[in-house]
Length: 109
Image 1 (cartoon, one colour):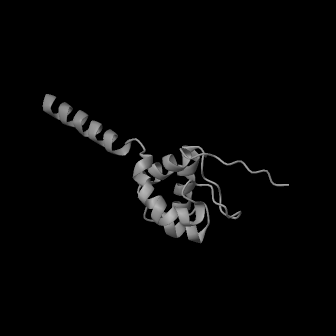
Image 2 (cartoon, rainbow, N blue to C red):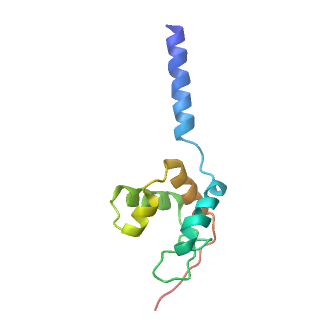
């Protein structure tokens, strides 16, 4: 009985560690350079008015947006094509990366 309890606790600890890994902004840099910067810019502040500015946004908002593109809840064929193969950890890393970039505020008149 004790061995079963220890196994169960070890399994739970492993699952928790692998599913709740901290986001690593540096791990997202390669993906940002290869894919994201073309539209959003390296720092997430695209000079193109039609592309959302991601720099300085809340990481939970950015992660949710990526998950919503992935699930189809948000409809955008371009983004859907880019996010379809992202893992949960890659999404968290990308969100952390862009959240750590400076925000650029723009007022439109």
